[in-house]
Amino acid sequence: MERNLFEWEKSQVCKLFDEIQGLSLVSDIDDTWYWKDGVSPEFSVKSAYGVLRGESDGVLSSLYDFFWIIKALPAA
Image 1 (cartoon, helix red, strand yellow):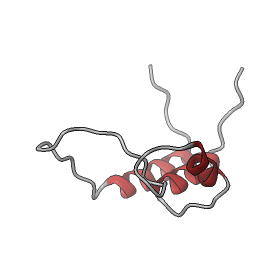
Image 2: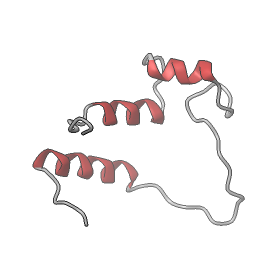
Image 3: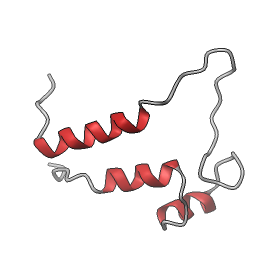
Image 4: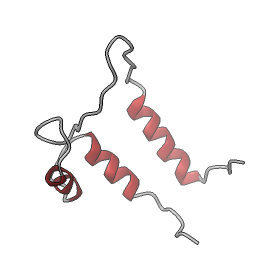
């Protein structure tokens, strides 16, 4: 059972939908994972640390900021 969203959550959801609205799925290529915020497409702890320190301007950095401003309730 899902709960209703709080007012502040509604605006965050709208912002997220605005961010992903222009994205499209591609079905004619193989699915693969790659790291968008690093120098190379391969993940490294060093590049992840750079994202956490705010040394990256990539997609993951903005998502990191987005999730850290959410006012979530503490775990019970």
